[in-house]
Image (cartoon, rainbow, N blue to C red):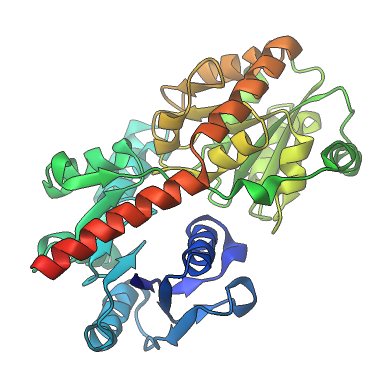
Length: 389
């Protein structure tokens, strides 16, 4: 297959989608596909040598206009290249296959309002959007992506996202294929895991017998750190419990909140980590009380490390869990008592160990290899439809 992947930037150190693209590109190239990357920037050291990279310059200008400019630049080079199929994971119009790793912008806006606990604040934030030019630009661009001209082959990374296609764009569910994201579990293989666990806990100042819940995110507000701290404060028993916060190094407001809640001793703010493996190895469970995640990769990373997961119904990756066998799915991140109860549920070491074994088995059911095979099948189908058209 002659495949074009179009993405503005491929820097896997940033995590998320860009890391996933690198995993896929490596596998495509290993299997002998002719793969072309069209991007403005990329980390050459992280990419396979036989990948053909094409620099697509994007003129500087208004940031919300960047998807329009990048898509215009892509439209100028793709037709002449005559690839079998072109694939995009984000805001790129005019490609054959749309696989939005971040979900739909309209859904991101709607669910993002839920991060405000007050209904008044939600209404105020919603009204403020109406005066934001970026909001209108991205909404218009999204409709251009999916509804104008030849409609693309559409893949959603969860049924949660597929429902958003129908709700926000009026696209029938039957026209959207579902293919959950997956990670390369080899990234989390470690024969020295026990030693890493001991060393990392020592660095954190955590006792070997403590129960450590890991929270990993860059957008703390959207991923629910504030209600999580309130939930820790409401736990009936906090002795021997620690919350490890990894991600954005700007933690000042949350450290002050932890102090006001009287839980500063229970929380470790650890800042950014380009390689979070040691954090997973040192922890006992993952807590991800997100307000919106199309299909969170941290859930799958946690399962690959044998960690039970607490997440919310606003996370497409919750579809990969089997609660309460390998984790818990809470209804509302703002329900501090429900979240505190979920944390307390895993203080029982026997229950936690049983869930950990189930989480590892669950992670092995949906593998990167299976994800890759299904993606190739869908791309082949898209290429046939393109040829027929």
